[in-house]
Length: 215
Ligand code: SF4
Image 1 (cartoon, protein in one colour):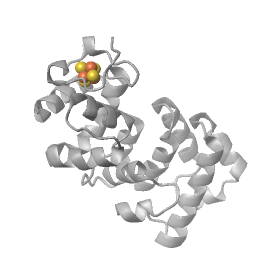
Image 2 (cartoon, protein in one colour):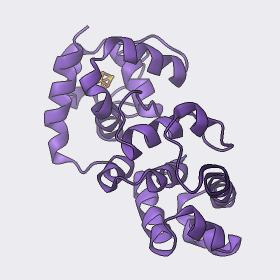
Image 3 (cartoon, protein in one colour):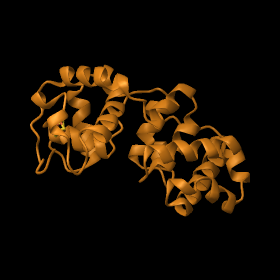
Image 4 (cartoon, helix red, strand yellow):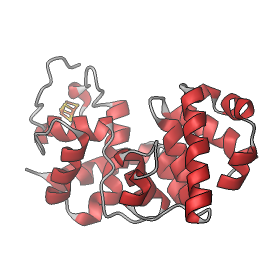
C-alpha cells in the first residue's frame, strides 16, 4: 500500500485549487467559526458554506451574538446553505450550550464536543483539526470515506471505522492534510457517482474497489 506517494502526488496536484472553506477557516484560529461553518456545510456545496458563513459572521461571530439574532433573521442569513430551519435551530442550541456550559469557549475535546446535541463525529473532528489546529484525529466526510475505500487503503462500511483504520496506516504528519486533499480530489476527479479515472494522477496506486462506472 503506497500511502506517502499518493499523498505527495495529491499535495502537488492540489496546488492549483483553492482550499475548501473549512480548511481555510484554520487560518483564523477561531474554533467557534470553524464549528459553525461545519454545521452550515452539512449536505450542501462548498460555495454555499462559504457564502452563508460570511453572511452570518458579518452579523454574529460569537455565541452571545448568535443568541441575540432573532430566529427568522438567522434563517434568512443561512438560507442558501439548505436545511436552514434545522441548521438555525442547531446553531442556536450549540451557541447556547457553549455560552452557558463552557463560558463561551468551544470545548477542545472530541467527547465533550460530541456530547452537544447536533455535533457529530465529523463536525467534532473538523473543529479539533481546523479550529484548534490539533491534528490528533482524521475528519472523515463522504469524500475521505469513498476515496480511502476505493484506493484499497481500508475496507470499511462507516466513516467512524474508516477514521480508525486510517489513523493506523497514515503517518501522523499527514493527518492534517488528508481531509483537504481527499475533499478536493473527490470534488474534482474521484467523484462520488462516476470518478474520472482516465484523468486520475494516482490511478497507478488505486485498486478501484467498488468502482462500477467511471469516465
Ligand atoms: S483511479 Fe478512479 S477510483 Fe481510483 S482514485 Fe483515481 S479517480 Fe478515484
